[in-house]
Image (cartoon, rainbow, N blue to C red; front, side):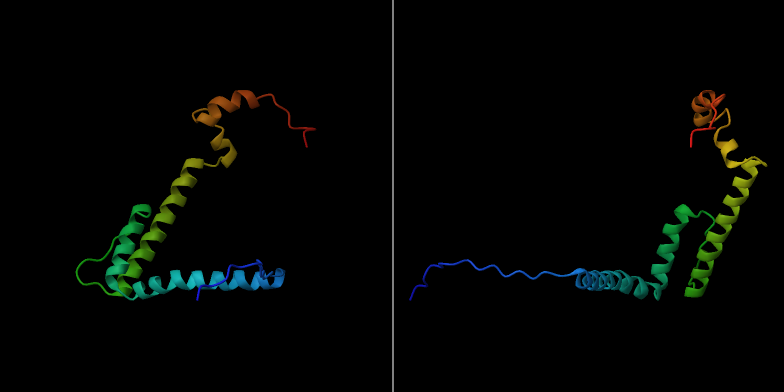
Length: 132
């Protein structure tokens, strides 16, 4: 037998307060972290994953030298850690040599840079007193 046409429309709405919304957001955050962390943790136990990760990181940290042959996880993670530390030390040394006793503002506003070339003539003779 055919069904009769609906005569009323009933809307059921569930409203969450601030506390319930916070609980739902924290549960969603935990679920998303778990979805991301599970494959990463599983991959970290595999040497080929770590070698691939090291090769990708070597793009940004050129001092990473990965071991050859049949490396262990400890060798690969040690090589990645040492390469990142060497790159940081090299960058810190280069930036301190580049500043040569000057402040960072003096370096940014020197004559040879674009900022110094176009902003320095404008800022010369400009007084900051009474501006703040």
